[in-house]
Amino acid sequence: MHYSIAFILQIRYHKKHHLSFHIMKITKKGTQKNIFTVRRARPGAGLGLFATADIPKHTFVIEYTGEKITNAEADRRGGRYLFNINSKWTIDGKEHRNTARYINHSCDPNCESRIVGGKVKIFAIKNITAGEELAYDYGTEYFEEFLKPHGCRCDMCHILRK
Image (cartoon, rainbow, N blue to C red; front, top):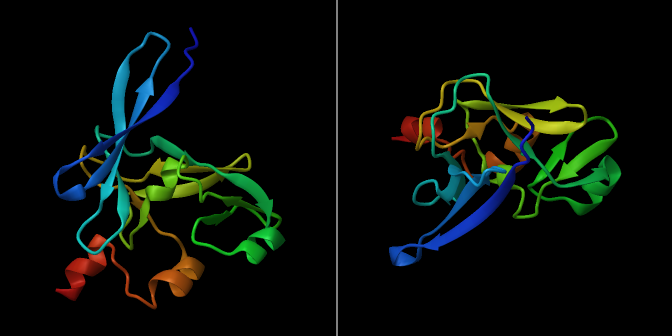
Protein backbone atom coordinates (compact mmCIF):
# COMPACT_ATOMS: atom_id res chain seq x y z
CA MET A 1 0.00 0.00 0.00
CA HIS A 2 1.29 3.47 -0.88
CA TYR A 3 1.13 6.21 1.76
CA SER A 4 1.53 9.87 0.99
CA ILE A 5 3.85 11.69 3.32
CA ALA A 6 3.62 15.32 4.35
CA PHE A 7 6.05 17.31 6.41
CA ILE A 8 5.18 20.01 8.90
CA LEU A 9 7.44 22.54 10.49
CA GLN A 10 7.13 23.19 14.19
CA ILE A 11 8.91 26.26 15.52
CA ARG A 12 9.84 26.55 19.18
CA TYR A 13 11.35 29.46 21.05
CA HIS A 14 13.56 28.47 23.95
CA LYS A 15 14.99 30.36 26.91
CA LYS A 16 17.64 32.92 25.99
CA HIS A 17 15.91 33.41 22.60
CA HIS A 18 17.24 30.19 21.08
CA LEU A 19 15.17 29.05 18.15
CA SER A 20 14.80 25.49 16.89
CA PHE A 21 12.75 24.00 14.12
CA HIS A 22 11.40 20.47 14.26
CA ILE A 23 10.56 18.83 10.95
CA MET A 24 7.93 16.17 11.45
CA LYS A 25 6.76 13.46 9.10
CA ILE A 26 2.98 12.84 8.93
CA THR A 27 1.80 9.65 7.27
CA LYS A 28 -1.66 8.95 5.86
CA LYS A 29 -2.49 7.15 9.10
CA GLY A 30 -1.69 10.31 11.07
CA THR A 31 1.52 9.03 12.63
CA GLN A 32 3.87 11.84 13.63
CA LYS A 33 7.59 11.49 14.03
CA ASN A 34 10.28 14.12 14.48
CA ILE A 35 12.90 13.34 11.85
CA PHE A 36 15.14 16.42 12.01
CA THR A 37 15.63 19.45 14.15
CA VAL A 38 17.26 22.72 13.08
CA ARG A 39 19.18 24.51 15.81
CA ARG A 40 22.43 26.34 16.53
CA ALA A 41 25.35 24.09 15.75
CA ARG A 42 27.63 25.68 18.40
CA PRO A 43 28.45 29.16 19.68
CA GLY A 44 29.74 31.29 16.81
CA ALA A 45 28.28 28.99 14.17
CA GLY A 46 25.00 29.21 12.32
CA LEU A 47 22.06 26.83 12.29
CA GLY A 48 22.56 23.13 11.61
CA LEU A 49 20.39 20.13 10.80
CA PHE A 50 20.39 17.41 13.46
CA ALA A 51 19.02 13.87 13.35
CA THR A 52 16.35 13.06 15.93
CA ALA A 53 16.63 9.32 15.26
CA ASP A 54 19.45 7.01 14.24
CA ILE A 55 20.14 7.00 10.48
CA PRO A 56 21.90 3.92 9.10
CA LYS A 57 24.81 4.22 6.67
CA HIS A 58 23.76 4.33 2.95
CA THR A 59 20.27 5.67 3.81
CA PHE A 60 18.67 8.44 1.74
CA VAL A 61 18.32 11.36 4.16
CA ILE A 62 16.79 14.36 2.37
CA GLU A 63 16.57 16.15 -0.97
CA TYR A 64 18.13 19.57 -1.56
CA THR A 65 15.29 21.50 -3.16
CA GLY A 66 14.76 24.88 -4.75
CA GLU A 67 14.29 26.72 -8.00
CA LYS A 68 16.02 25.11 -10.98
CA ILE A 69 17.93 27.85 -12.82
CA THR A 70 20.58 27.99 -15.54
CA ASN A 71 24.21 28.20 -14.51
CA ALA A 72 24.37 31.63 -16.17
CA GLU A 73 21.49 32.81 -13.95
CA ALA A 74 23.25 31.29 -10.92
CA ASP A 75 26.39 33.27 -11.78
CA ARG A 76 24.29 36.42 -12.08
CA ARG A 77 22.49 35.87 -8.74
CA GLY A 78 25.40 34.60 -6.69
CA GLY A 79 24.79 33.35 -3.16
CA ARG A 80 25.60 30.59 -0.73
CA TYR A 81 22.73 28.18 -1.48
CA LEU A 82 23.45 27.44 -5.15
CA PHE A 83 23.96 23.74 -5.86
CA ASN A 84 25.34 22.97 -9.33
CA ILE A 85 23.76 19.81 -10.76
CA ASN A 86 25.39 19.68 -14.21
CA SER A 87 26.96 21.86 -16.92
CA LYS A 88 23.62 23.62 -17.59
CA TRP A 89 21.60 23.68 -14.37
CA THR A 90 21.81 24.76 -10.73
CA ILE A 91 19.40 24.46 -7.82
CA ASP A 92 18.89 27.73 -5.92
CA GLY A 93 18.08 26.43 -2.44
CA LYS A 94 17.84 29.78 -0.64
CA GLU A 95 14.20 29.31 0.45
CA HIS A 96 13.78 28.36 4.10
CA ARG A 97 11.45 25.49 3.19
CA ASN A 98 14.54 23.76 1.73
CA THR A 99 15.42 21.99 4.98
CA ALA A 100 18.59 20.52 3.44
CA ARG A 101 20.06 24.06 3.28
CA TYR A 102 20.71 23.73 7.02
CA ILE A 103 23.19 20.87 6.50
CA ASN A 104 26.59 22.37 7.24
CA HIS A 105 29.99 21.67 5.71
CA SER A 106 32.41 19.28 7.35
CA CYS A 107 35.92 18.18 6.45
CA ASP A 108 34.93 14.84 8.08
CA PRO A 109 31.33 14.46 6.80
CA ASN A 110 28.71 11.88 7.72
CA CYS A 111 26.67 12.53 4.54
CA GLU A 112 27.31 13.05 0.84
CA SER A 113 25.37 14.62 -2.00
CA ARG A 114 24.52 12.70 -5.16
CA ILE A 115 22.86 13.93 -8.33
CA VAL A 116 20.08 11.44 -9.15
CA GLY A 117 17.82 12.18 -12.11
CA GLY A 118 18.60 15.89 -12.00
CA LYS A 119 17.84 16.09 -8.27
CA VAL A 120 20.25 16.59 -5.39
CA LYS A 121 19.89 13.77 -2.86
CA ILE A 122 21.72 13.58 0.45
CA PHE A 123 22.75 10.12 1.72
CA ALA A 124 24.34 8.98 4.98
CA ILE A 125 27.90 7.69 4.44
CA LYS A 126 28.29 6.76 8.11
CA ASN A 127 25.92 5.55 10.78
CA ILE A 128 24.43 8.71 12.29
CA THR A 129 23.15 8.68 15.85
CA ALA A 130 20.19 10.67 17.15
CA GLY A 131 21.33 14.15 18.14
CA GLU A 132 24.25 14.19 15.69
CA GLU A 133 24.58 17.08 13.24
CA LEU A 134 24.31 16.19 9.55
CA ALA A 135 27.19 17.45 7.42
CA TYR A 136 28.75 16.94 4.01
CA ASP A 137 31.79 18.31 2.17
CA TYR A 138 30.71 21.36 0.15
CA GLY A 139 33.59 20.91 -2.30
CA THR A 140 36.72 22.87 -3.16
CA GLU A 141 35.12 25.80 -5.02
CA TYR A 142 32.66 26.63 -2.20
CA PHE A 143 35.34 26.05 0.45
CA GLU A 144 37.80 28.42 -1.27
CA GLU A 145 35.21 31.17 -1.84
CA PHE A 146 33.16 31.15 1.36
CA LEU A 147 34.85 29.10 4.10
CA LYS A 148 38.62 29.50 3.80
CA PRO A 149 38.65 33.32 4.12
CA HIS A 150 36.96 33.09 7.55
CA GLY A 151 38.27 29.71 8.65
CA CYS A 152 36.42 26.41 8.50
CA ARG A 153 34.07 25.97 11.49
CA CYS A 154 33.39 22.25 11.16
CA ASP A 155 33.89 20.05 14.24
CA MET A 156 37.08 18.52 12.87
CA CYS A 157 38.75 21.89 12.21
CA HIS A 158 37.41 23.29 15.51
CA ILE A 159 39.18 20.45 17.37
CA LEU A 160 42.40 20.93 15.40
CA ARG A 161 42.50 24.66 16.26
CA LYS A 162 42.47 23.94 20.01
